[in-house]
Length: 284
Picture (cartoon, one colour):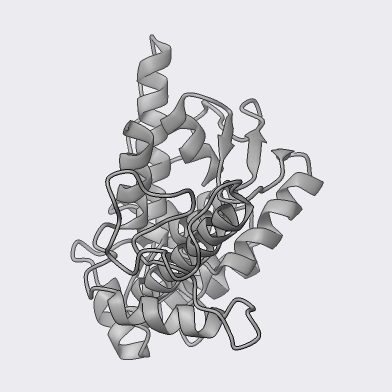
């Protein structure tokens, strides 16, 4: 996911919080966090700046290792590409390949049990509508024959992948949504996206409250505007939600804040897919 963000930003150093990466990859935020540190331990990425306030951590990918250019020899389902003549064209090819793979693997049917799992999504994403043999599948996903066969068999039984004597391929018609409904996981990633969106709002609300408390000149508690009462020149820390809820002891009431935000949330707050959202953010 960091490779996609780096290609979009034209910079190997990018700011990325774990929730954003989790939504892009179709995994949970804790899985994304542990994966980042595993990649860092193996030398694939480096954390340049830790997370601070509203900003996620800044990570640097190693383009010579992570963003390679041997795309013409790694895919069996397409004809070899001619040599790329410019950096822009190469970036476009890499971005298209990585985004396509991400869209294929980031699906409810590849979430955690009772769904098929992340590894199954990775295998599916590497297949195309042309047949791929077992040896190529193993090389593409970095698995043993036993590991690849186990997952491929699960994909075939689920009806997401077709098998022939020559190998495996995706069916012409995408069956992932149908299978996710059968497994009872349809809509799981959309719910996760809304949850993370709410968590960002809660965190931003509290940061605004901290900014108000630290302001040298500020309105009294009673004079602070309520929800939706922003002025033309709002005070430091003022936001559309008003003052942060407090307990009787004056401490932050996070539970009440969550209830209030949930009551204000619209059903279509999360309308774009994570990949579309990331593309729009980097294009702006």
